[in-house]
Image 1: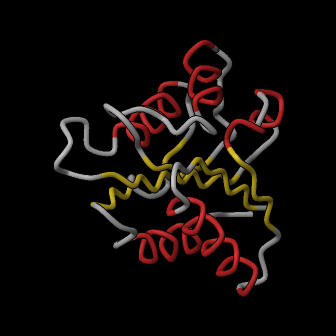
Image 2: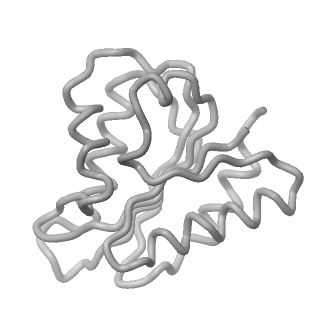
Length: 143
């Protein structure tokens, strides 16, 4: 099972998440797509393969449909060592905190013991690079 978790302000990150979903299903994977704020800590603890796609808003902030998730992982000390994951971060390099939301999630997941199996993809201004990221993620996960 691949858990595809997303937060999006204007739909681009959501589109990347659903493109990954389509690609994973075409390769025979079972998938579970959820908005980040719909994921509880208990849900997260039970996951093994996690792809997180998020845009960045404001000054490196999470979109509103992902801010509760970020707060949750910031506040917990629960270890997530069973998770192998990667983050695809969408942002705009003209802003000071480029891809800040994705960076914050990625760094905290690592601090909690989750294993990044693909380096964080940072997309500048659009979703360029997200397809290559998705392909690498699907190649490296173990189910």
